Length: 303
Image (cartoon, rainbow, N blue to C red; front, side, top):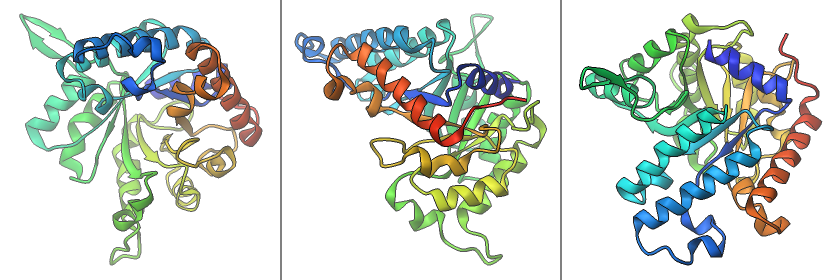
């Protein structure tokens, strides 16, 4: 089960960090941007940046999260860089999370699932368009929008993270509304995620159908951790968005398991604060984040 392998990698490295490759041209050092004149040049520079950064962090972090919007902005060349970034990260042994927040129903949802988690038949062969291990999805269309993704999770090699309580400041406008039965909208969505993942619970007690739960809302996160004992969290909001290790401690269980924390700008742009090369600074930032998280969580024990 993929969730077991991810948890074991987190425990082996003692590091529940996902590096967010939300890479835009503006984040690159001046010398890498100097000769860029078009979308192809931008995509090539971003891919070079990503590959070099991956080379310098693959031995200390278990996963990368690649945000598709930053690549879509550069058109077809950007999407090529997106796919090649995922492929390169996988070759280096990292778990790959495609952050695409896909959502639709019926055959359209099935096509999204095939693109990122499954395969499409072309020329008599099954081919995966974008080699992701896990995918972020939006569950607010209900069960028929999630079913094609959840079915692929049942095979054991893929996982998803469903938006439940997001890290943005205005998330409460919808997600904190109360329903007639007394639950909030985010609690209702969390309950659905727990149910959708019931058939994929692995050795460590967590399922391959996870939840996106922002570090910037610790009170709600604590409620969800108690309410969803088998749901693994993808936790955005650390660093630039204001979340810190103490705020997100409530997302984890007593073993230090239960989630993986994303950090994007704080790692990609670390060289602007630390100095030196962007890849060495990124490695230092990853190690500093690891130390910060462990100061709150203690040792991570996958037993």
